Image (cartoon, rainbow, N blue to C red; front, side, top):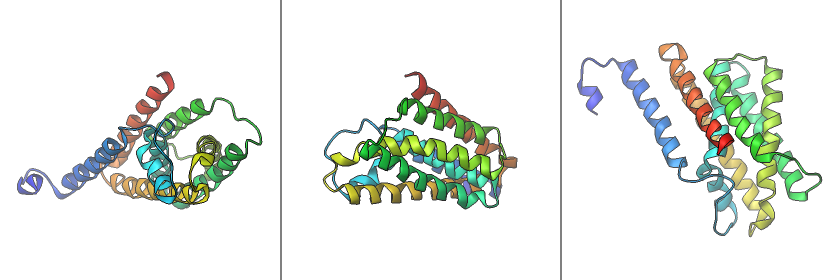
Length: 207
């Protein structure tokens, strides 16, 4: 590594640069696609697994949940990432069965990116109950959107399992990234990443 050969860079600086590079790489990998306009045939587990990884809006929201949980610390490290997929499944059932329509779905998804990214950028240590309410509210929108797509899959049950597993892994990645970035520069790197997430959310809001 070039950074390792330069004495001017300390160990913490090199680690922070690497962590930031990983975050940027994850963003670049997800950037080419959007979660709710992906084309092509939908299969089973594999198709469901790749869907949130290739859908930039969903990816950002999931990553933000993990980042915010890590930033808040305590029980929020696991309670936020655990709550989102569970409530998302409820939204998915509503979308799949069309029990009742949820209006402004895309608006809700864009706002989820802005609000969660804003909470990270502001380093908002909300009460756990407040944070869980916010998480649950936006999880309904994400679940509803993908629940509407489930009947189109060749194997809806396997597709749903793959989707939830991938979502959980993105949460874990967000927690891990948040715990690493939070160790440097008083958490400023985490907050900067939150601000970048807000900008992406604004793009989805106004496009």
